[in-house]
Image 1 (cartoon, rainbow, N blue to C red):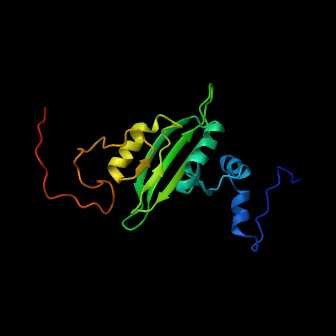
Image 2 (image 1 turned 60 degrees about the vertical axis):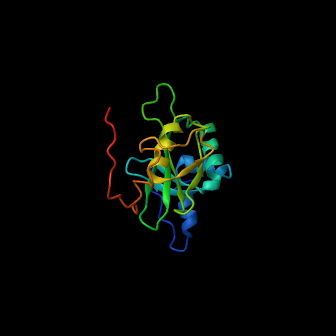
Image 3 (image 1 turned 120 degrees about the vertical axis):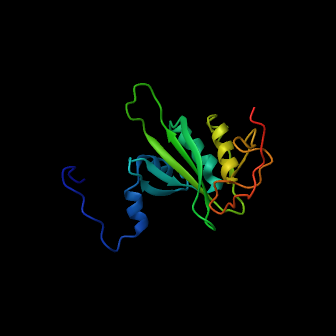
Length: 181
């Protein structure tokens, strides 16, 4: 056992990158790995929040495990576009809320989706706060949340064509005047 006051020596140059990533994993990533949930650990952001990436087929099992682990609050579900020809991303920011917590643990989970088939399971059945957030992401990026109970446009008119926040979206040359009352 190493002395906690002694800094750990850097890994040898021949050590594979995967074992380096495994050793540096955060507690949430380690929990998922210990329980057999396939994911990729992306490190931490500037605020120290763990970033994880999962395949869309594993989103529901991973989210269910995170809920069981105590992440009982979906603070944000959003989407973003990595650029024309690049994947779309569905992002989930989860918090483990409990009484008296000054800085509750947080984690972000992302799923990359192909532009030609941007489907992902809805997490509405795990966190009800995903309802309008998934609808907004659908409305702006065209990501389809399979199993959502009421997936329809929330910001744009229902007959709007296209997904306005995609980076390859072409703005129409016309706008219809609508009643303002």
